[in-house]
Structures are given as structure tokens and as C-alpha cells.
Length: 140
Image (cartoon, rainbow, N blue to C red):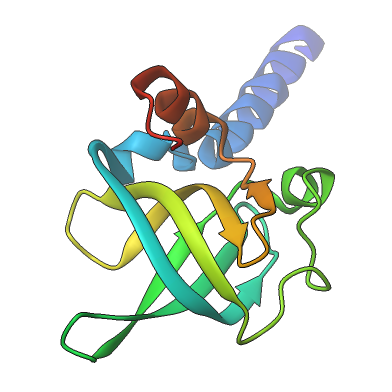
């Protein structure tokens, strides 16, 4: 009886832990490695939240219309290790972002790196997207 109860509890614990693990996705289920993008815009909002940090930028199109883009980075601890904090990202600051566009065509990007106007680069701790960019030569 005791072994059966322990086995049942172990099964329940494993089942409960499976839910968060299965909910997380590979970056290229949402974003396409066939859609490398370079965007220039100004920071509108910064969210250093789990499981992924986000930088929202306003991008002015050739027609003068401004659209908001969400740049997905890695987890906050990875961003901080790479020097990205709320203090280093200033609202209104101009950025050039390198990444991969969403499969559904929405204004979301798997960010690889960004460059500030002074030329300093910061990698966005998005390991899968960064590895793909290096392999494909898309970090120029």
C-alpha cells in the first residue's frame, strides 16, 4: 500500500511539472529563420519579465506611418548578463535591431542584437535565434 501511494504521488508530481515544460516553445515555432529583419526605431517600452524580456520600438515606415514592434529577447537574467537593464534602455532612444520576423506576419521579432546610435552592440540572450544568425551570416 505504501509503495503504491508513493508511486501515485510521484506520478502526480511528474504530471504537474510537465505542464510548464510543455508550454515553453522553441523560438522558431513562432518566428521564421527565413525572415531576417533589421529595424530602426525608438524605444517605446521595456519589459524585463519572465520568461522573455521585451523591447517595444516605434518604427517609422517610408510612408511616414509609425508602427509598434515587439522585440523578444531572452530571459531577464540573460539580458542583464549581457548588459541590458532598464537603466541602459532609455525611452525615446534610437535602436537598430537585428532579428527574425514572426511566421504570422505580425510586428513581433525574435531579437538577436541591437545597436545604439553610438555603435555599441548588445546581444539579446535569445540563444536559438543568435545561433541561427551566426550560422546564416545574418549578424552584419
